[in-house]
Image (cartoon, rainbow, N blue to C red; front, side, top):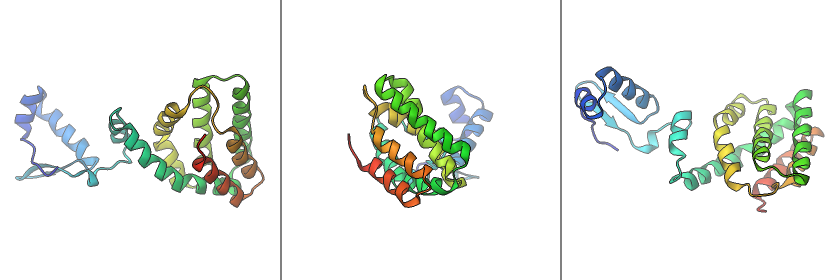
Length: 197
């Protein structure tokens, strides 16, 4: 961070690409907060505190095997802050179709309890949590779910062994949302996120 990159011609020669390709790459990385191009000064590498970790590509690049545990720790802190609120709002704002789908997903989870399929569980669990954000009716929370769907999927893939996870906690969330119980939904989600199986 802080260093000045070589010029376009030198970078092009180093990587065997045209100046146009270098310009496009710099433009893309600048949009992610990773570089700061300045005329007659050069392109500066920015500190990670300037990087836009809410950028889908940057998030994907960051979530490597070496960084996975660190990314998940940061993700879980954010999730613990937002998901209970999404459940709270979903209890009020979920439409009939969303309520039916939540009930259907938790029924599918129960069926998987008897006849476990790891890949299917990961898909259903990811859909379940994404639907809660959608049902919140809050555009920022919905965007969060869309942006982090790959992180959710990777997280559930990492924690899922050979059985369903926290089935009753998922059921409690659905029951409280279907009952329109805001506080109950918020609490049920907090319990889900704090409980270690």
